[in-house]
Image 1 (cartoon, one colour):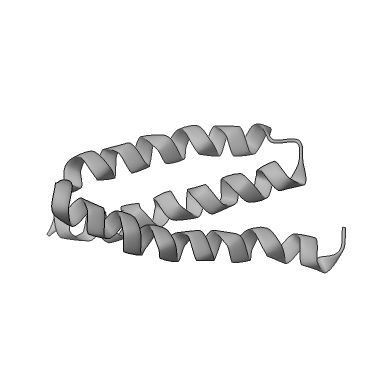
Image 2 (spheres, one colour):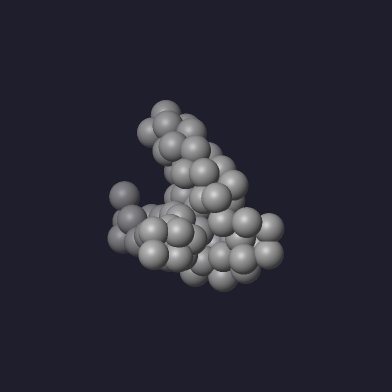
Length: 83
């Protein structure tokens, strides 16, 4: 496995994290934080199981991106909910 194949999922995860924080954070401000937070957490749980079972590299990268989006949303939304 060459080094670019190792780095790509992590880069995609960070890009997804940034997009999720921006997009889903703004949506949560307008539509309510609780439902977006719970939906993001449950969807991340389900996608992490699918990622665990993925056999192809492209599906692994796909799941890393969407897990990054959902994790970014959880990080941005959870702080105001706790405070």
